[in-house]
Image 1: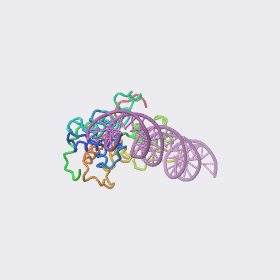
Image 2 (image 1 turned 90 degrees about the vertical axis):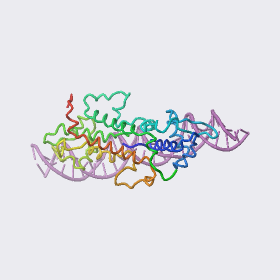
Image 3 (image 1 turned 135 degrees about the vertical axis):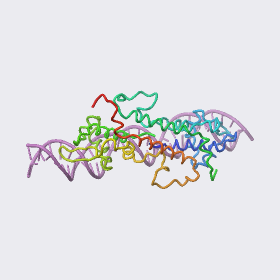
Length: 139
Length: 139
DNA sequence: ATTAAATACTACCAAAATACTAGGAATTAT
DNA sequence: ATAATTCCTAGTATTTTGGTAGTATTTAAT
């Protein structure tokens, strides 16, 4: 039941971009310095966020990334699902996948489905904006 | 955010024992047949449950395992926590561990803590009894 | 006592997932 | 041109997961 480092960093990157959300493109180099990870690793974290349309990205000199929408428009759940793939606690709960052949006689599937629901409901109840209103000491 | 097979099987074993909760000791051999896994692997699943005091176990001929309490006395959360170790979505949330050095300035820790809370609240809202009231086709 | 049936313990192992590292191509402003 | 940047793909070391296996120990039945 762990969130991977990709999920955690993905969220932190989005938070960082929300903090520095003036119209400019923010380079991975800057983010990397602030979050203390390498640019190369950051590239991999940013890639799915960019492909999901969450970021506007610009190559070349003075290029970088910026949020495609206002921080309040991003549900944290959307970000985590992009980074983690599927958050369902067990495979048989995943939507769109084939249903577990034992589902009929399986006592636990309803339970797991409910867990999936509370998790998604919780993470969807926060927006990026909610995470940056807290007073901070640095950055 | 996945529950491991150990967690899933652990829960299924407990459900199986709840179904066959006549005073007798149930052998792993029987459970293994019903759940379609090997006795050897079952041993490893049962071990932490037994050590946690959830089962009364008996060695030797006619030995086996049985629930130590009534099914309604087991919170599903207790079982999952024994099997999965710690269910907190990120390390810095774990109780008893050292706190993350960035906790002060970290916007996400409150969010993760909240996620941990809703997960634990949900899984603690079910007892083993709740999972076996569903009508079943087999066993 | 012997034996058969069971759990208990410990070690090992292979495959998959995770967390990175690395190289180079493409793009863009200056 | 050049420097700075993203984009794309591949590789790799480590950790975690999902088991297998061997042996010792315990117990009931004969």
